[in-house]
Image (cartoon, rainbow, N blue to C red):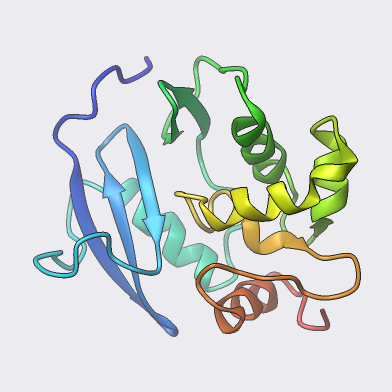
Length: 175
């Protein structure tokens, strides 16, 4: 069943080698995953309600998980990660299309901004793809760290040190 309201959202943080990761969601879906908190105070350490996701995130960060349970869902200009996919949605705009393409980049592989733009229907939109990556509300599970420039590692909204860290987990240390 697809959640229709974003009620009872929980916020938590988990500690990683490169700092805290902040998560918002509930037992059915995740609305955000970020390196930086959206609110700087009062975010508790993880416990309980988000175990289904935080347990998988911890396994990924140890190099033990390659695919997260669930999938993307688009609703009212929101991008959610649903715990159980029983219903797929079709991207309605460029941002959603790019997010879907990025979500399908396999673990341990990369795509360029230009190839994603071409897959989205306009190879001239590589800069737009970069902007969409920079606004990704679901870092790591929608793996914008796997998106690189044609001749460099590209950028990352949370800093290249974190991008390299995530790529190293996936065996891509030589980029």
